[in-house]
Image (tube, rainbow, N blue to C red; front, side, top):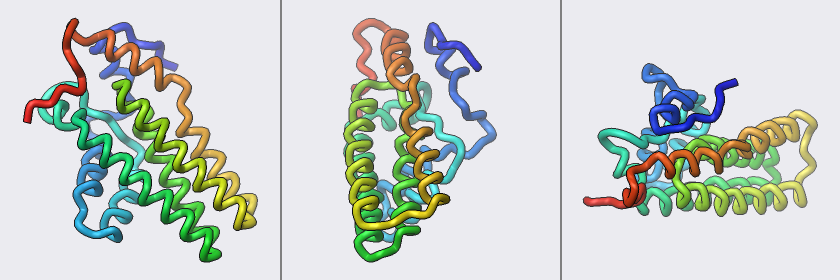
Length: 185
C-alpha cells in the first residue's frame, strides 16, 4: 500500500493509472458532449467499465478538465444513470437497474480520485442521487444474491476513504493564490 503523498509529484505517482492505459476521463468527456440520450448512456457505461481513470491535474487539458462546465456535466451524467436505474426498476427490469446503479457507483469511484474540493463536493451530491435510485430499486425489486453482491462491491469501491485526503493534499500543493478551478477560455 502506498503512503499518502506529501506534494504534487507524489500525487501523480499515487494514481492507479499508467500512461499506457486508456483513461476513462476522455470517454466521459465524449459522453458529456453526446447529442442523444442513448449515445450518452452508452458512453457513460463504457467509461464506468474502464478500470483506469486519471483526472488531469497538470499539463495540457488540466484547466479544461477543472472548469465549472465539467461539474455540471458530471451531475447531468449522474442524472442519466440514476434515472435509467429508477426507470428499469419501475418497469420490472431488476438487472437493468443493477447495471445502471453499478455504473453510477463506478462513476463515483472514478471521481473519488479527482483532487479538488468543488469536484469532491459535486461527487458527494451525485452520490445522493445514486443512493436515492438504489432505495427506489430496493423498494420495487427483489434482487438476487448476485445482484446484491455486485451493488455491494460497487458501493464499496465508490466510497474511497482517502478521497478527502487527496483533495487537501492537492490543494495544499498549489502555489499560494493559485485557484484550481480558474479557467481562462
